[in-house]
View 1 (tube, one colour):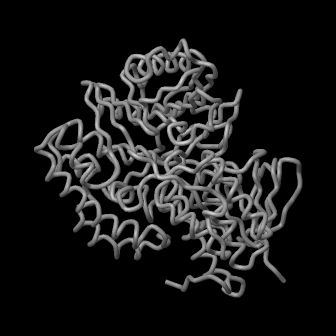
View 2 (cartoon, rainbow, N blue to C red):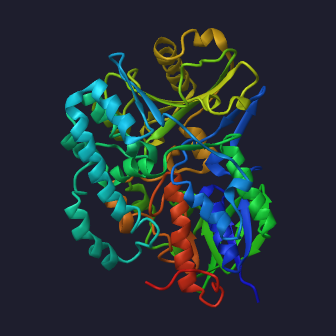
View 3 (cartoon, one colour):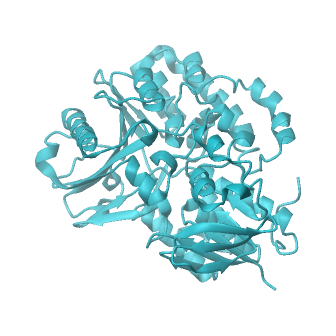
Length: 503
């Protein structure tokens, strides 16, 4: 008889896992609590403006190609992926800027304009990043880290690559100019980490961008989600919306079923959870069934920062603004220390501004622009984001944008709403409203991160930001490859089409 795999949650990790499990021969039921696919990659629409809720930077697009190729299809037949150039524009507090992306020569030209003394340093940084990439991404991102001995085998290579250093130390070693050090050390923030405490293995992101560039789907991230949804329907995945899983049930130490909020019980041979592992362990699994993850241990983990996201549409176009803009404040290390260690973020914020209409004008009414701006702030462990606090952050964000990037912004606002850590907690069931699950510090990476195969319950697996290899679109898609590997080991009689062999 065909075995049943239940996938909880339809973020990119969940959809990728559903497709991989279906290719392996399972009957797949995808349970989504919301009324649309995508998880954090869902879409908001208001008055003709279309907003990506979350992921806006697509790197390593081959990971999406793979999902369609599983079924002899092509991604290009479902969605158009457009290269973005420049990848990012960095705006510094002194009024200078750096356009980053394109060829290496383009980047070297920009660096020479900022500080000629750092041209060779950037070449050295790029070479070092490639070495880390060749190990950390090419060799290790798609394989399980659930055995300590496997982790130990990687230590010599990681030491040789200097991964005991932080990302900031790595960048500082190669570059002299503080502006360039900031620009080329922000990669951990894309996956929820502090550059001053995150291991420099995450510097591989720099070369990952260089290898495949930065892309954006025509029609917004929702078009990519829709393409995956169409593929899932075509291959027979049973997608069920409005299904709130409240308990993962086991018998004799193995998954037996999941129970929904309406009392319905759905039986399964295995469960792949795309929810936040911390929330899942604490709220969906009985205490006696998870001795490896007690409430005390979960409470002792360090979580990624919170995110304040302001979505807005303008009645005019800001043609001079690129697709992705990083706006640095005066402070850097001091701001990140406050954000990750508690306290208020303060007024001197750094921002990520997304203008998708720079690449796809159809995401706003004619002659208008769609934006979202993201400000890293402390998560809910360090205080609630009540109405007063949210309004203070909103006004400060608008002040910064209006004075530095978008003149006359307030007079041109037509749509404006926000999303804060309390919304991440309620909408995505994210522990402490953290934007990227647990922080990617060394003691919470690889073997020390939530395992893709649950320790205390057979046939329970995890994909997504909280598990190996980590957050970010390439990370969560790679986590689905890790789970495919593990499921093939545990269910060899079903996984007849899997490429994986036991390691």
